[in-house]
Image (tube, rainbow, N blue to C red):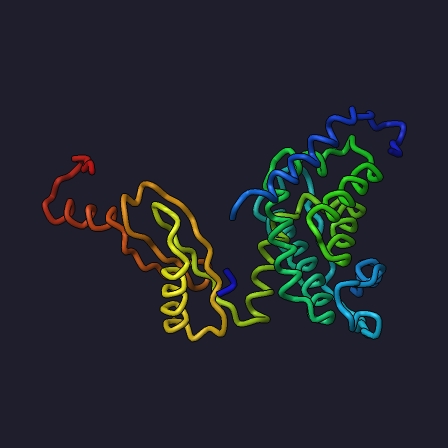
Length: 269
């Protein structure tokens, strides 16, 4: 189980703003639970010192689809599709580099860290703020990369997103990377929702059952706490969570209410 160099038009922000972003990133990590050769060359600009074979590693030339940019402010459905295409291109490029380096699992772990960091709106707002200089953003990224132990190619990837002003796609890129990673590793994600955190042995049993149902090589469990279930748990898996196993007391109460035709009567426990 896989349990400050500012342009004349830029306003200089107080150091406390950058410090707050760094602190927010650290706090987030502590919480429980077309050939595009410039991109690829920058991703490999630093050696991966954690791998003994990195010095002899030959990186193949990779090709990704052209990156489509959103037009206008809203963009509507068309803009959303173009953003998805761009996020998918970046995610595929990162996955290809990780695969060629034999660091898919490690990179997936780094992407999870990145997801936690940028889940803090203060961090995301800092990096998407056009009044903050790129040098300042790179400086903070370096601090985040060091403190969270990101691999060099992942840190470089984030810097590229800043340079190309695509850091606003980071959340979409994380989602797309997970899809690519799961396909490459034959991994099925199961989201287990319960009132309280389940014991590891119970999660292991759930993982075995999902593996039996899906025949996936690997099962990855994600846990969510939802007090409204009253007791029990639910398991959602399959493409985009299309399959659901509901073992919650809430579901049982709803079924009882339906059989008794209680209408809008609220059941309390």
